[in-house]
Length: 353
Image 1 (cartoon, rainbow, N blue to C red):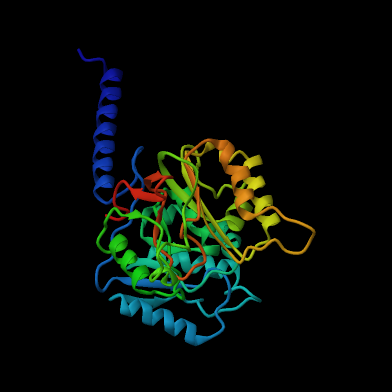
Image 2: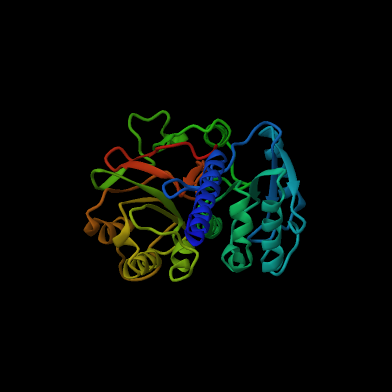
């Protein structure tokens, strides 16, 4: 006679295995994460709906909102405005809960394919505790932005494993190069290799002067790509909203910061142990980052060399990433390979499904 207890245990185990196998197959089919793969959103198609949000600084002029809607339409997409997009709470675009509720609602809405912020500024870090990460993880979609949006794209990746995008805000230039990379990455699903852009001023020069690669430590490295604005990222250290940087590739950029402040924030990352975990480092542009007043200053190059060179991992300075005319769309949380000699970032798989 079959032992009743063993029979029940065996039946439960077999049923659980079957359910788990079915779930994993279903998850893989829609780009959900496994132990080795990230959660990738669906690609954009003509007519896809884009939710327009204002998660940071307030938008005071209706014309700015009109411009962003026109951008979305020009991309062949359909804009949808968040309920609180023109709200104002001081310098913020509404209260923290209002701004967070717009994001939660757009992730809940299955008709929306992507979420685009109007601008950065300040405020995304304040709303992180009010986001519904379980809801977001169950409804993967494209979210992109840069500058203050660094907090949002890193936190959502950290909490859900969703590939987010360091890319244009609604009011960026949307020139032909920026738009081309956006389309290739998010419409066509190409696995791109990113190299330094050539500025317009260099188009008629014998050599490239702007956006020159300065290799700190030569070599190649693979790892998940994370990064964004140094000021925002540094301020998140010690919170539960940063991804696991072990074996990662980290890129950094900033704007209008005195060099001693860049030094202080880089020191913060060093003392917190962030740099010790990395496989590679990329420092982009630090637009209008000046020494300030005083009797002397380290140069920006010296500060970066001081912090990165001792790591002895592939690294370079001068990537065309930052508060610049053309904002390329980079995948956050996706495996890439970097070449510090050539100054390239190569995707190892498409960022969308």
